Length: 469
Image (tube, rainbow, N blue to C red; front, side):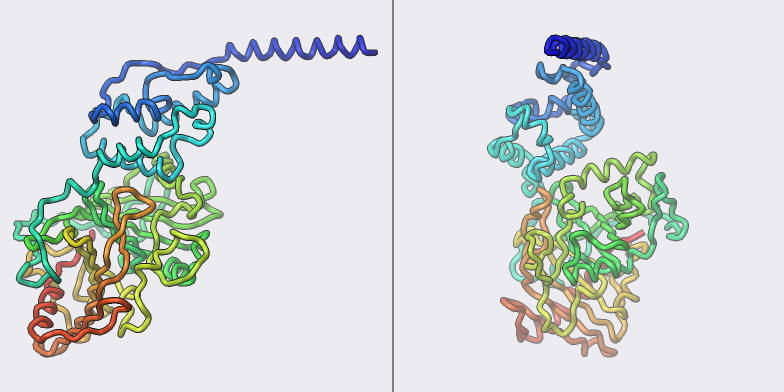
């Protein structure tokens, strides 16, 4: 009996070895070729990338001996080819400098959020682990806040004498598309023209690409923020992330300039199972051209948001006073106190600016009457002559926050503690326009001299609305 069992076991082992050996012959190739156009960067940056990233993200074949064994080889090959398709450092140098820089910023965020290198890869290849010193070297090379415009110093609150309007001759306005006729993305994700009426969730100052962003949410999103019900976000949540190029004004402030794009997200856990429970879309330029060349574009969206899977794939920290257990989900620090005469975050945003010298950001909000005059769509041509003419009953609120680094995105800044809220109420008589300011700890009402009130009213009324398609 024992002899029979041993013979059977020997046959099984022999058959297993034969099958294992035959499997080694099933070995699809992994292309291996010299770098065509490597990233142009200092030696220490390139050495770090070569050590930690090139195994997967380059055209150079760098497999360990155990990676060559089937079936592990099949898995490694799939990961390498997928990684090269996403980012290939062997050819990155052929892309424009801005695109190379943007790629490195995304790489930093993937590293510091723990998404790259893949944890399972580092477990078998510990030499690929990015050390804190290496990450600091890459961050220092990118230096997002050292490449901005060289602006004059600004002291105190900006006044209308430091005119925010740009003295530029605007280009001819493009023909605006009918929002109802904007094409869907190739995967069928529809454009939602109602985004312009959604409420502000947060704002972002992006030093990595010199852009500003409004992050807006529909009623479902706003209620979820107020209730702290965002883990996960409820079905029906919609976001719009609107981006503008930054432009510097003569008074030393940075203002939103040319419209770049709007990105939309729709939470639908049942209908979007294959794309992390969200629908994704991006429309670029004033003509709102769909971003995707084919339905596969959505992989770029989900790949970028994968590090935030613990936050339901959302990078934004919404401004809210709701108290929840987890940290870095809501931006409680930037919330406004309940005792203000109005709650600006329940109004619509009109424009924003950043003071790079004081590291503050301000957003102008308007009530329904004010928004009728703001006419964001199409945008003004620039210049103070195109500032809105607000009707009596309009109330404007300029909220100024300190800035802090965005913990979810290296190179971005978001609102921190509110420093002031200024209200301007328009009357039938221009001289009767009222001004109130709440500032300091707790945002207590401050009394200002009449001359300063006049200057602040002028400054706020002269702010130019953002441009929307």
